Length: 447
Image (tube, rainbow, N blue to C red; front, top):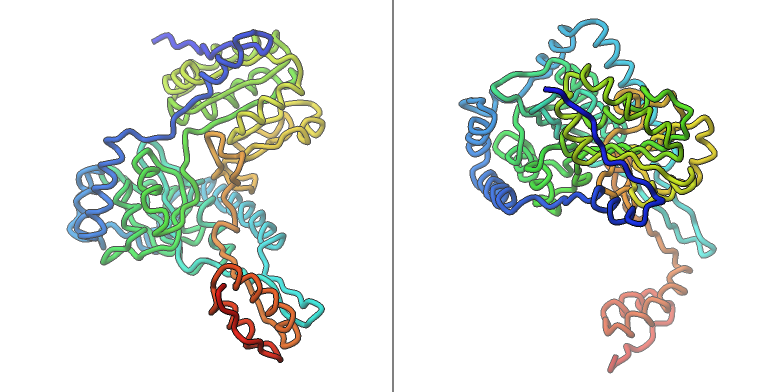
């Protein structure tokens, strides 16, 4: 098959740009009704029957038959054996990546993840206590591809945060276990791991079964069934986000080799057909060079068919009037990955408000962030970077307010609280505050 990269060519100078741009950008995060209903059925069944339902769905969807959940749990010895069995170069790469990810998240924890308190002028103590979650579940995709990097990015910040127990679930269709994923679980300090996936794995983590412990929060990406299941169980447990297709946006000034930019656009397109790759550039001749590079390099890619479908269905090469305009459009998109492929990236970075991760300069390929730079690669998609953040230590902690009112402080605060409480018609609230006053007033009536 003669594959051709034909992403949409758009220009901001065109009178129809906004309509064309919005049409290209649009992606509906809503799963279809059949998936929603199927997921609801699976969740209800797992909640009712526990292990038996998980075993049944694992046999049906992953062609992996087991007589007990014990057969689907990966032991620590098995994780270590996988680590010992992979090539030394892979062991070294996993450990190096893990060190960088751990170092970054330890710095993140020190920056704003500590408890704090102060005393006011009346001697009352006010503050915040930060504590880790007791148990979290991490979902690691394992269908079309294996992602050991996702193990590191989910488990390590949880470990740094101080989470007591980390439960990993990973589908292993037909029982095929990926040694690198298991080795990553060993390196990252996963507590327990089960070879289950899909909505049934999310249900097992959310509700608990006879074998799989109930967790407090579920993180990690998955397919439409996993995303739908996470949405359904939110409230019973916490979740990180509902992830959509992967995205990359490259702001280029024409100074980076065109082959580099073409391959960076490929790096997201190869995930799946719905992934989105966009180039914004004020140099039309450079856009031509990137397109030429795409078509020259595409036949060399093992996942060329997926890349072509992604680029041709959702990709765009956009000619802008200036880099300033490119930055403004980027803020409208709020991409998951944002590369500033420029010889002066720090000139443009202050103009950029919304992105999951920002990659500065020609040498900072998005793929380095995916694997080993240190910051987390679990990022908001589908424009949600406008209001949400990358996965981090803070996702595995919770905050409790600390209040210790002194006798003197009660005299001031009690009057304020009582006044507001009477105004709300909550006399018991008011009276509780007034009883701490040195001179207790008569209870008001008619409030």
